[in-house]
Amino acid sequence: MEIVVARALNRLTVRQVAALKETGRHADGGGLYLRITPAGGRSWVFMTATGGKRAEIGLGAEASVSLATARRIASEMREEVAIGRDPRLVIAVEESAPTAELLTFGAFAESYIASVEAGWKNPVHRQQWRSSLRDHAASLSAKPIRDIGTDDVLAALQPIWMSKQETASRVRGRIEKILAAAKARGLRPVDAANPAQWRGHLDVLLPRQGKLTRGHHSALPWREAPGFMVELRKREAPVARALEFTILTAARSGETLGATWDEVDLDNELWVVPATRMKAGVEHVVPLSGRAIELLEPLRPDRPAPDTKVFHVRGVARSNMAMAMLLRRMGRSDITAHGFRSTFRDWAGDATDFPRELIEQALAHAIGDKSERAYRRGTAIERRRGLMERWARYLGNIDEHPQDGSSLQVEPRSATTG
Image (cartoon, rainbow, N blue to C red; front, side):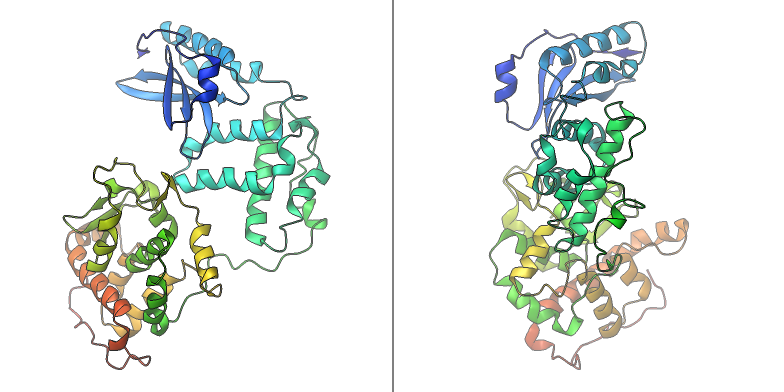
């Protein structure tokens, strides 16, 4: 049976709601909360409990759902709970939303993001949705959602279509999803085509972009990596430390930027990335080299909250573009942060005799069947620690590693590949 903890009702005022800025949930009573995300998203949620577990139900963005409306919806949901029904059956959000003629693209976009972002694994993804629409779809923000047409979408996309191709493609896809959701909710005519649709529509109106090399990322040749690290370590910007950590751990940039202090075990020199943040959906344990530990120690707050980001900007995860911009400032727009995974793989394969399976594990690539992977997890960590320590030493000692790699020592191959 579902229950809602009884609390005093109507704690907040309209003025208080407008003034609240602190991240977290702010109670109005009776299970109704104003939720403010680190990225600044503001939405109403109803909290209930079933089987001892709390559940959060989104009621819509604060910009499009008033305090009075949120209270009415919460009241109806409490009634559903009282008679043993699922409060999600209440559909008053759509019924009480502003009419299509008044509801703007910006207000509906925030409402849509707030309703689906709980299903997104990566907090950076949430931030990027909002920031990309803010930066590149601002011309749509104040227009009624019902009236958005092809010319409006083109006006937003054309300034960046050729100069920022990947960003433009993502913005187009996000606009298309928002307009599709508006149509599904009856806020756009049911017979209207989606003006952000690509195939058969925008593909004949926008110039053809150069082919995006998806799945391929320009990599730095491994013999040049120590010299690059010398230049990187001269940079004092926090994002330079994030990129260095990414390179040292052979991680994906999103894994680094989303890292929290509860994932880092400095005592045991491990970084445990949960399955929810991994591309393959499998937990990944990274043995930290001495240099990686040295890099993390000055960043650690005295009493970090478990979900505090390691490489944050005023409490918010950095954008994936931060590393790309750093490389551009360094005059290295020819390479990518992700490409350093290939640099690591090439170095490990060409300059060491560590087993291929161990190298693939370090990159969080699946090897073997489930039973084989389970067996190796316990024995491979320390062997991978040796690999990551060798990588860190190689990156940090340019004078000991000439460009032809001739002085490199190789790890003796073991008959057992952990």
